Image (tube, rainbow, N blue to C red; front, side, top):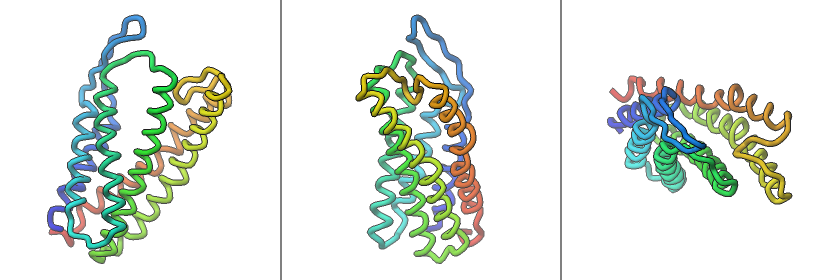
Length: 208
């Protein structure tokens, strides 16, 4: 349990590195390479190590074990995505759909991480964080997973109707506008809230 702040610290700074996007890219005829100054691989690996460390905390609860397992798989997928992002190329439609589905699973993994932190907080009587992690879980569910899931269903309907669409880019003003609003405003609220909880929890005096 005394190692928990270290694991939370890895996740906190790992997420920050993933969010920061300073990169140099070069493309020719739609194909090329992208080099991040602080590459997402570093941040994703830090998150994976942090989640892996939390999974080893002694919590005798099957819900915690199942939830943190999903979080661990999701963080591993994020590492694979980080390698994938190095290469720039025209993504085939079906590959784009698969990536979108994996993105949804990553969001599910984040929700499961919140659930695991709720159980951990209950186990060790960390009262200030039980309600906070539950709020974070609800925010990720209602402001991220459900809206993006609906968009994914719409994209699949377009696909099955043989209407060409790109990854989250529908051929309509409504679709593009909705995507921009989601990605620039609503989607950021749960992430910012979770980062605040991580910052507060890694500084919690009871751990020291």
